[in-house]
Image 1 (cartoon, protein in one colour):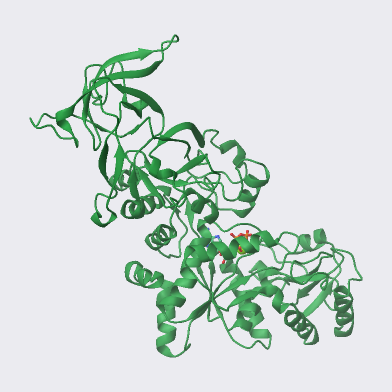
Image 2 (cartoon, rainbow, N blue to C red; image 1 turned 90 degrees about the vertical axis):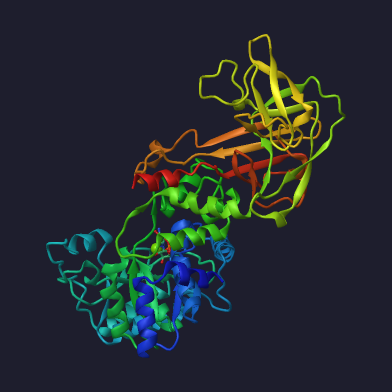
Length: 558
Ligand code: ATP
Ligand code: MG
């Protein structure tokens, strides 16, 4: 289902073209991809692009996609992140079946290959300090210098490597390096580090290892072990590809994967750096990884974004080879479009102003309200009218400017599904604040239409005071004020008003049901989703996205 959508709507991109050609030529019989997160943070919408691409092509071309944790750095990785990543990939709609792997599953094999490189004279133990190595690495314009330890004998290298593994040396005392070319134009080929000493417990291998492989040494070999055919990664690894290939060429690996690079997703007003996201959480700038303002999948879920809307957005973005910044309005567009189709309509008053219908004598009558204007099968519900109602405070102005069509003294408006009402009097408190409107209604306008075809210029949403349920509503702005936030000094760019809490909202009683967890549209206010902070007697709603289509404006400006 997911893959089918991607195949038809996204059409082809260069990755899909390559895979199709490889299958056609017989180079591969089945496509095998992997999504390789490092469990050092939660997944974000940028990862969603990599997930949709890797799992998507596997589905479309009848192959498979592995979930592989790139867990080579035990000082930064945690079980919480592993659990969150699995949950979020599933939530996004993808399934790795039995193909759950870890780079740490291959530590023994990787180590054997390290000894192999030593045996064939293609790796050596270097005793230089980090600073010495950095100084000898050269620059983009100058070659590096060979290490004084580069010509050690195979025996000495093997002995040192084994003692590194056995934990004989402190952190940083030595590293194992590949012996490639210190004068290479590609700095990644200047004798890259394969193993470093790290006396750290690993979430999976415990205390078994005192040395850990580098990303470069682990990644391609893990791909080869798993039979990955197309190792798809982001552009910053393009310069690593010669090294990726060097390992594959120089080791007795069981298969020959190839690496392909695509442009990472960047979103305006958003930071997609795990380092920054971690700092936002640790520094208490947000409520956690699942704060609805976070671009994490957990945050988007809590905000009420349906996974199908994310997949749709990723499909629209497409897969290219040039980096760019995607307008965050495009994500909102996908969310809004999806929710417009799926979310039932309800009425909720975010900032209530009391209305008393002076000539209403009834005890409250039930009216029919439509659950979805485009989907008759969603049916109708009964809502109660009454003498006392709440309307939106913003829908009233005592001294309105010319273009203000909503409530003001003497003005008639329609209450959705109910009657026309006219404002007769404004009641204020001692401080001069409007606290109540005294209105009259026209009994002949039941259902919202006047028999004399008299027009009103506004239709307002409302709830009846007798049975409305109090709720807290949370509105969100972008976390960052700049279109392209400065990831270096991001705190200065945080919008102090990114969260607006409205503690006194009043919502239709149908929203208080215990199983009313689906996304809803609050008429005229946007799409909302019940927050897990809700408890018995305390309803909390997050605004997923407003109704205003900023993307339409963006498109119009193009
Ligand atoms: P870091 O490596 O700095 O911790 P990362 O975002 O690269 O951060 P990984 O866990 O290594 O985190 O990412 C897993 C996969 O997701 C990688 O293949 C990476 O290329 C891809 N990925 C990460 N960020 C994006 C992005 N913004 N757009 C597309 N793909 C991304
Ligand atoms: Mg990475």
